[in-house]
Image (tube, rainbow over all chains, first blue to last red; front, side, top):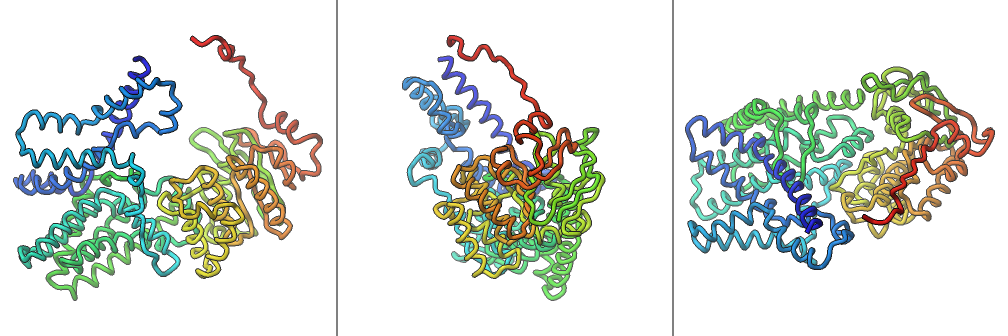
Length: 338
Length: 247
């Protein structure tokens, strides 16, 4: 019993720590904008923006707590067969989602269909990594080869973006809007605003583009014989490709302009305020104020281009180019200072 | 080829490296030895431009490392302490990245990458992502990345640690062959038996200061004896509870 409670105690500590990283959404631009809209008396917008966050968070929250223990370590511990069985039975209850689903089953405040859907999704996410075919990471990693020497850097950055929850938030909006448009229910004047919401969902990535590289990745960047602007360009190319793809069925020019503005503003934070990011979590901004400014700029750029592309689009490109050159230089100087 | 003069690095009040001066000739294999925390990796980071020195001068082939780091990166291959790999790239993609960024065309890059993968027994794991590789595979990948651009100087931070004996021998033989072809090699290691076999120059540091610098042929006694005398001494603890009946 002492051994079992020691293992469960360690698991609980790991889960509590992980819960901290789950809260990363509170530093995400999408949540921040929702909070600002709530402050200005628009609870409907707050709910609709955060409903997407909640649905997306449901998936990483549904994982099996026992997977936090490395399988080799678990196998090496001197636990009896009976203790292992109890561990298997008790450990799922360390997951808060299991308690929520159990409470909803008893309460019956929601329809059985909705409950069964969520319980089914929970079960799939919970069990899938343990299945022989369930632990393949190929889907998000199959990125096509691109021409040019920066190919592998761009592919790496595409994979990093696809393993952030921000991407799935943007993808949900893009998919919903595309389906709505295909069924003829999306008014034509809604295309630009929805494109901007998609870029807004991605924009925190532009505020910390080196976050997923870790210290080792940053050291590798510093060892490569590349200019700072080339490194930023590789990073940004991945972001722009994703933004263009997700806004393509709506208003791609507005989407790309908004993405360029988000990147141009985000270079400062990415280069000088880098912090580590965790996979399968929402990306976080270091400053609410800077997030708001970035969002205002991306909306202005996207909306401006939709009114007069000839005037605004070249201006947005010029600002982006200037930012890339300037912060590329900054990146080199920071690297040289060690 | 490598010249360090009065090199200092401080972290707050602590001197990580103090007044370090040495030269390494072209084609030499210089082994830079010292205990954990003696300042070896800090020195390698300064030599490769990853860390700016607090004071002092470093030149590689006459190029100032601090003033012109890009030129240094173009002529050097580095196996850094943390290996510097991206979790989201496979073993082979790391090599393809390196070749293209150092200006090789895709065909030559692919050819060199294939040869290195075969030489280092990485062919089977070529499509494994770095995050899923064993430490040995990761080290071999970083070593292959250092070699692929055909550098003039190699900086290797603990290349033989966590490597299987066959690959360690292969790396050892390869380094000797490379030094004969004029490539300068600067390495740190704790595997004294290997160092004794291949090094042509030995530098030992203790608490950031150089305590020995000579050609390997001029060692007064075995490297192990000299190392324990100069670099660190063992501190045996009895640990009497080990071997006592289980409680």
